[in-house]
Image (tube, rainbow over all chains, first blue to last red):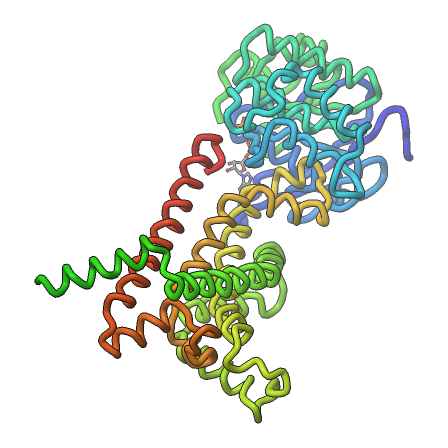
Length: 241
Length: 235
Ligand SMILES: Nc1ncnc2c1ncn2[C@@H]1O[C@H](COP(=O)(O)OP(=O)(O)OP(=O)(O)O)[C@@H](O)[C@H]1O
Ligand SMILES: [Mg+2]
């Protein structure tokens, strides 16, 4: 059913293989609870892959992903993704966001320009608007990357390790932005290796190990009494790929 | 030795005094090649971009074709354009033969494959670089086209200069379709060929030096563009 308040992601019989080797295999997964969802798992487990499949960047070998009941397509849809390693156009900070704003004509109207400037102000890049985006620092790049995904007001936002290279103050700054968005009816699914961050932000957790969902559930329960031995090992810092 | 020094002195005198004959020829060369460049880019940039961004049947064939045409011998181009524009040719009624228009057309045929191929290569490279980004923030296809061109602007300028360099230094095509007519279709390269064969070396050398200077200027511009691009992190 289409639900306007809590967007749903429904995955059925999903498989992504490369050269015959399955990298992701999910029989059934439904993400429809309110609040932020976190995806956990060791390096190479398939977390980024899952997000890219939901975004439509990668096509499944077989299986179905439905967003609010509609199959994922690369043309339609309201989901955006913040990539793990963001790339930037050879343009200024301002222009990097401006080109992501959906519009019908090539040049932005005054309202849209103000919208871009307000977004840059919000992520703390207000004084860098004319700087070439590729000259930003690592943390500034992650802020710009987040701003770029937020500007088109996605209903579902997929965020892949937004604070992996960021100092503590900026991390909480970015967490606040994410939280505010979540309170404003954007379904957020994010990946992190920071367990404390998962606890601070998420209500719902998914554990991926070797391309399989080995556990999911309410965050508090997930961390207190993990069911899966993989989750227990991961949380204890013992699980390697 | 004295002889060579003397004609070099004469050549330099022609340049420094802004000799009317010399600069009429220089100006015509620049006008023709620049016009050919602009018209070529109007065709080649969209064509290269479409080829670079889309996958369709026959695409590889077209890419191979344009790559091959990059090395087209100018005399062959001259001959083909001559046949097309000659009185009994399909476009003979336009009366373009032995006019600057004929030379512009011939140079366009030399420039278009270069700009198309290089644009296609660049855009394809950018397509790989930005595919995930554009899908991740859902930039519309129609919007992407302009973003690619904007992103590639420094590379495109360099490509244009390569096209201009090929056109202005070429002699085989323009001498056939232009005819090297004084005050009408006499270009730097055709004049050099003619004056050298007549033994009028000072004029030939003066024009040769200017041509070299233009080539230097083109390459210097390319170099400066690269430096600027690098400073902005746009390389
Ligand atoms: N398009 C692809 N084609 C082939 N293999 C891929 C593709 N995308 C990902 N992989 C492989 O799938 C596996 C999972 O990759 P993924 O990026 O999802 O890991 P991850 O869980 O995000 O790890 P990390 O924590 O290091 O970011 C890796 O072994 C990777 O090499
Ligand atoms: Mg990853």
